[in-house]
Amino acid sequence: MKPLNYLIIYLIVGSLLSLFTVLVYAWPVLDGVAICTASGNQVLQAMVSDGDSGAIIIWEENPNLCPTIYAQRVNRFGSIVWHPNGITISTSIVPATTAYPKAISDNSGGAIIVWDDHRNGSDIYAQRVNSLGSTLWALNGVAVCTGSTFQSLPELVSDDSSGAIICWLDYIATSDIYAQQINSFGQKLWAENGISVCTAPVVQQNVQMVTDYSGGAILT
Ligand SMILES: [Ca+2]
Image (cartoon, rainbow, N blue to C red; front, side):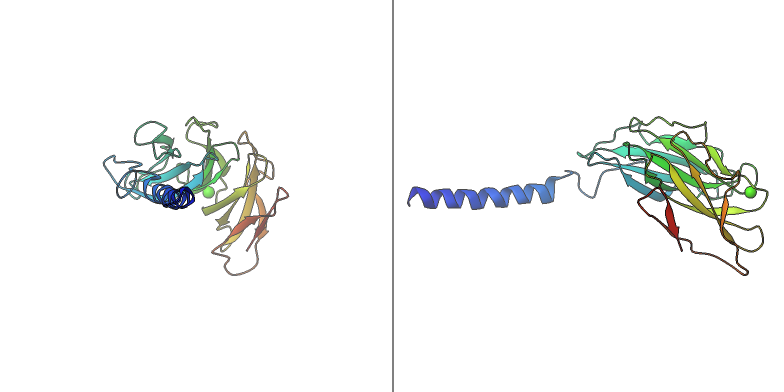
């Protein structure tokens, strides 16, 4: 066989082997990498990119019993980066409640997390964690809305400045939509308990939000 033929066969076989390696051995663990194997129930997970081909995963442990929010980072090789079984985001969630955590990237390798919080009623709290697994805001999170009425089911998008725009349902009258912006330090930038987005009669629900890529957001 001529040398050119050998070269063509070599390139084809090499390309197939490279493709096989990428498809099969990206994370060489059958059935996936374990993020948390602690006792109890880990559920309601959220996930964001770590900006370096890995991910930050947030979950709630033991909702309706003694709920706690945890987070873990897994790198591009499928290796756990932070403390085994995760770092604590908040332990201030009252027993027999559920936090429903949501998260976005902070655009700096970390994440911003929001949740339903019942330590003083039904409120919205948030925490930021950096790429090293250190929480950056107040212990157990900063208050986003602690109005005397019932707040729940927050959503969030990036404000393009390592902060977030957060919206939630607020049961001041029926079910209304409110929003707040917090900066990269966890400080509120709008009215103390948020601005009203929609307070029309009857019920608003199933709120969704996207960034407008100009530091704002669009809600429906
Ligand atoms: Ca409240």
